Amino acid sequence: MPKPLLNFKYLTFDVVGTLIDFEGGLKDCLAGIAAEAGTTVDGEAALTLYREARYAPDVGLFPDDLVRVYSVIAPKLGLPAGTRFGERLRDSAASWAGFPDSRDAMARLAKRYKLIAMTNAQRWAFTHFSRELGDPFYAGFTADDTGVEKPNPAFFQQVFDYVERDGGSKDDILHVAQSQYHDIGVSRSLGMTNCWIQRRHAQKGYGGTIEPAEFTQPDFHFRSMAELADAVDAAAEEAKAASA
Image 1: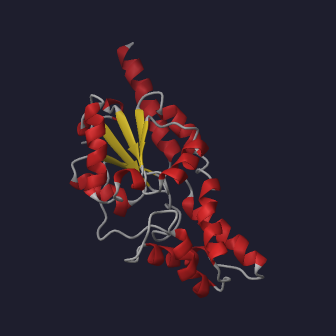
Image 2: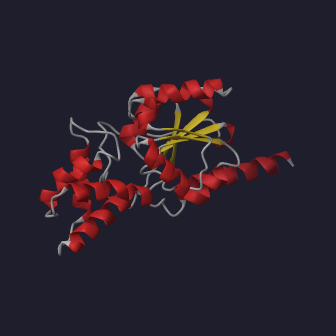
């Protein structure tokens, strides 16, 4: 059995896909380009093409890499060619919305835990994401900060080192994420307690996120950030009642 939710001091978070609706952001931007060109795009088909292009050998840092990605997927989607459209897709990241429950859930969780972001996005994009979420983070780690991307264990090790300097340990961390490939599998292999936020619970497939080689059963499993925050609040109420 995992540790009780109230026994953790830190919550570490995947950001893009867990807190920020990057799939919706990508689809909205591509749909806008398509409409101007007098055509339409299938959103799920676009995510499949995005996933294939994003995880090619010549990838760059995200979301700057979306300029390259657009050049790969545009012909297959019947969209106009041109660097300006790729730059438009990249720049759209600055206005991607959080999931409807993210901001409130993070505010609630920040009352009980130190919240740490662990994102494969670059620092410039994370600045926008954090603002969208109400700047709830105690600390944040990005791809250009760490020099690596998840699921590379070296990314996680830098967070472990930070937490130790802060007076905690790996055992004090609950890692929260939607990506089985980038987060849940590797966090398990590193001995972390994890929490899977199954954002695509009502949809088939993995959308814009690469499919894992194998599914990892998480320690905690919720369909939204609201459900996690509710579970924490309920645990706190139970503890308060038990001590009364």
